[in-house]
Image (cartoon, rainbow, N blue to C red; front, side, top):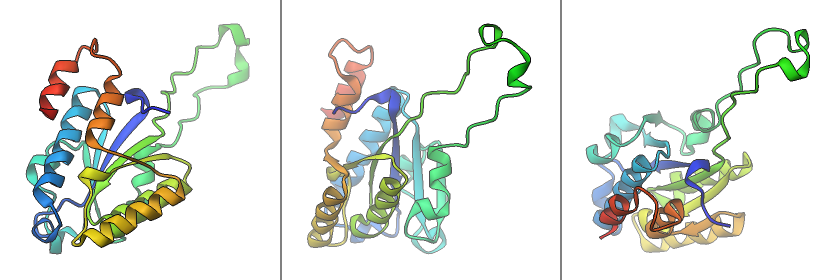
Length: 200
């Protein structure tokens, strides 16, 4: 099963200015998160951010925050506990009027957009906020794709333990390049050169 850009959303968890200096391999992790968000924008994939207790840990790195459509401030470790799920799966609006007032062949087709149920997620700390958010998304029946080279923790051991647990729970473990090239699917994609430039 490959990722489909039209069915995907990107969630970037807690790349906060006061947290990142303590994170293992922070510069590479942040750079990959920015690449992901830039590719998502080029391919019209919605990008969401979260920030854990921003009054203490600061906002997300500005270059990343600027690429998010919205950023959720939270106190719970899982963004889903604070309403992220409603952003990812907004409630369906009931059709206006009486559906039985016209014969079926005269009714307007539904304009409900295709659900974007594939959540590509990356962030810090992998074994706390990223993992708890991803596990809740799996419980809510989203497909979850964890971008391993855009995730980290203060220690390598904690990061790797999170990946083991997430894989066991049903998340797919991927890399930044795997995501971007699956979203593209072809060298003939109109945004191929622009996305490829982000990777090089």
